[in-house]
Image 1: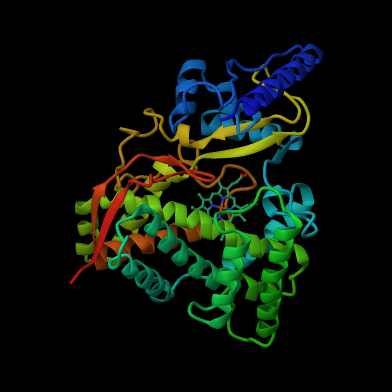
Image 2 (image 1 turned 135 degrees about the vertical axis):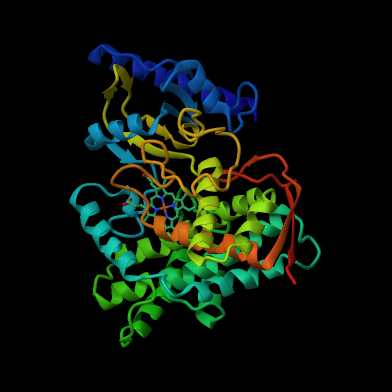
Length: 434
Ligand code: HEM
């Protein structure tokens, strides 16, 4: 990290602390205790960095994260109380899409606009039943996983990532946009998405990205036109929206980006599932040997829930749009609030041996949202929660029943574009079961 960046960070931190002092004087409050140093200073941060600050400073502490003054809150009950009590003073910290489509992301909406669009999307998710479609989805997963059993580089972490992304892309194109795997339109959309967001979404949308978005939109509107005459029950979110005439520019924009976020998040989760279950050969064998299909599903979903707890859930991020006082501490205007989901999932009072991956942890035990909430806490809770468990459960069942999975090297966890991910040195061997 260059000296110029360090100077800039120091300047930004000093100016934010100055503003916080001023707001503190007006509100007779102060920042929560903590450590406000730039990422460019001191030792590199790892997955456990905030957990260490939490142990040192308590459930509410201040830090400097991703170039922003950030108040961290650890504990789901405390987090939910904060989100509920301060709802009117918060906005989701996410990309502003209003330059491209009118109301922007559902995640960024508030008030009646959010209520109306969320209701529309909820109805669409409810109408698209995954029931009875397991073999269709398993065929997609099976085909892609088989590619990981041969060829040069099949053990490489990056190869696994690419193949899992192909699988998640195929499934999301089918379920969200109705583009059947292997069809011409699915191929065109895959190319268009890979050009638009090759490794997750851009934070700022430039005219170049806008043009790439318009290419996807053109393809999606063609698909929508083709669906107009269809009379069978809708099999994708797009088809539902066409059928119920709720397809406006905001819905189209959200469907397009939901596909992008979902394919990205799924492939991230699936990389972790592959890595974590590879070390649990006995558990995979137990799933394969289980005669009761319902029980097999529960066991597979438990491994998914445990992977979400251990690895894929990170945080809920909000921006304070005005000064907030919470538990006596000041959260300055335009600063960030991070509800630390991952850290709370490592609480030994809530989870026995919290740092150990126990794939059966969720088999016969339910955890309330006060302990476990990988998919959101408040009115922005994940709409794809059911799909996440269902489709990832199918991935685990597919691995257990049709493949032999061996962990060659767990590797070192690394910081990816948006999330922590399996390190480039992690190695898993996948072979087809005879
Ligand atoms: C690994 C899988 C996934 C994870 C970990 C995840 C996580 C989350 C979290 C934590 C939130 C709450 C964000 C907030 O409060 O700011 C959220 C919201 C959301 N998720 Fe997911 N998600 C996943 C998969 C999906 C899928 C597959 C879809 C759709 C196909 C989806 C659609 C959404 C939408 C639309 C919202 C915003 C809802 C609203 O604002 O009302 N997610 N997700």
